[in-house]
Image 1 (spheres, rainbow, N blue to C red):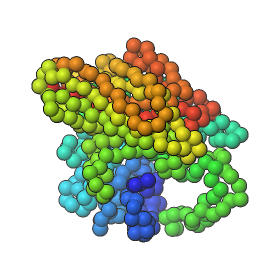
Image 2: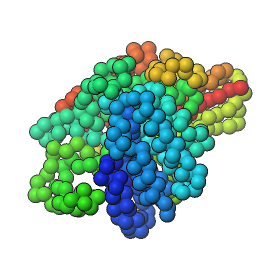
Image 3: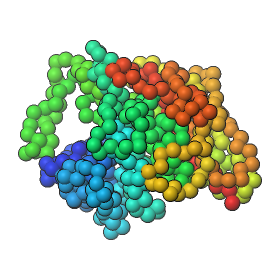
Length: 449
């Protein structure tokens, strides 16, 4: 890994002593591993909603800013977990607080990404839009959500696995869940969150508005599948941390997590190796994600009228300009952490119209989005170049891409005309993550005028 974010769970105890207790270890890690950028953050209990990754640019005030944010705006600390208008407003206020800390130069930058957004059904469409719109586009704090959750090993069947669901997505609607979500939204699809995996679904409805909203993938690494270590002793309430792990004398197959980078990867296009460059790349949406090292590189560009744009960007052209999408896909360069070299079977191009701001903030469909082109990949090594001709573009559209090893697929939730061979819903208790690998890219817009 080139970079990672340490995000302990927010809580009353963590708010009191956790941030500053961990910070010396993080600073020590930065000094010891100069080839890895180590951010400090926290897993925010979003008021009225799920968890979110919050992290800041390292600096003199990183501890004080995170500590005040957690104390004043964490849903667990404030007892603000229920889906009420007041609690939803508290979440927006927390994002505004972070933006103000950047504006006042307490920290150079801050970002928030919503975690496992469909797992409990409590991240409603209007809340996600409110987070996205809480701060100015020039310095947006909430920039996206997990396209794929962590806990990916949880679906490995018993007796050699946890026997639950990928991402631990094995729940059902509760009192605070958004009533419009279907039951299938509480499961992963090819390891990806329903909001991302559904062509024409919630993610498409967000990007069809023409506003940035990106996907990432993280490990959510708590306790790791097949690890031989166990949590050390120590008093968390007194020390803000547990003692270092110790050898347990057994291989633990009852856990559902992978190490950071072992299975889920978020690739960010940055213009340099620095904390600021990585955060700029994330905010700009220059991101693609993959599972199991399915591919080793991805370069997506749309070009026309002598210009080009890449992931997260927009190509501005005259109306009627001929536009072409090109993809250079670097195939897997060797064995992954499961010991085999993945094979990319197919790449899909998904296109939708940019329809502007929705009247109903709880909209979670995009009727024009569909798979417009699929490419069979008949190559095992090297780089594959794929091109798609959009023709002469006369109205705003966006494109996004995905790819699969081809092991599992199904007709998408909105029908074969929208998605003839998308990811299949994962089976609870029998979902080997290594046998169902996908990559997804963020969108790029084409805006003729």
